[in-house]
Length: 304
Image (cartoon, rainbow, N blue to C red; front, side, top):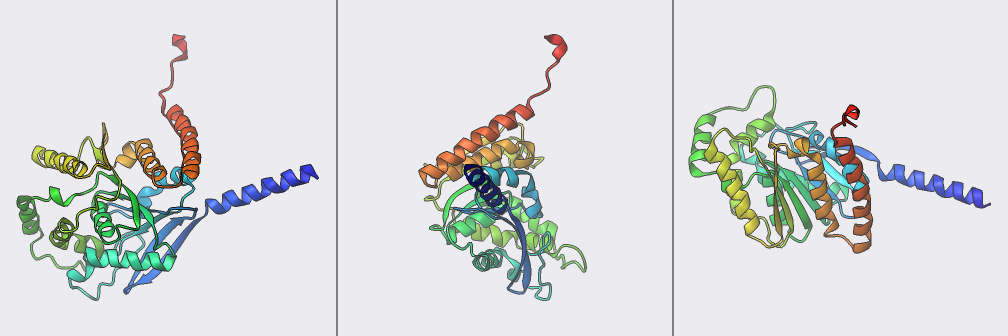
């Protein structure tokens, strides 16, 4: 009987683990667009990911599995309309109709359909940080924590830079084929920055702000302004931690995935109950030991 009981417990544990790590692709109809979500189903506080400009949900694949294994949380990644596997209704060619306000509105409705319209943690990269900022400003009670991965700030978009950008855009028309998402993202950038500038990230939400050592600019002035804006953002609230990802470029989660995973785990464990947090941190230690060991350079056995 004891053997049978042990076997049954093992089978239940295996079934739970398999259900725990279930991945699901979901396509939702929202405001005339089809939005694609890739969800790692788990428990507890969900983590919502915002990709950078021009990117889609697939960019998170490299860190999503270990994060899911460590936290056991539901991870929600998605493609904004016009990117990846999400569609954009091109019949309405009004630029404003495809702006950031509509994008965050679509996200709200989609999360409601999915049943994840309660409390969340945010992780955002680059341009996605503008979306995260607007989402958090609209729902400061829902967002429990955030990790920004070399996120764009309204501060960085100086008047001179924006004038040059608008001049370069000129009177471009929507493309007959190709990515409408990129077209409307560019055309809406000035309005996007103005909206986000007026909707600061709530100081009540704890943030870990990761900044690349090598931001994606050729101009020293642009690089300095990027880093200065991040330092100003961190100084603006005592619950913000700024970390420079030494040696990493703009895609920190590719150049130093362990750093990004550790930042997310630290942030997540800081806003959940103590028992669950201790369990997560224990799993994280095991993962970190293995990851560091795998990353170690091979030794020359002939030297010993």
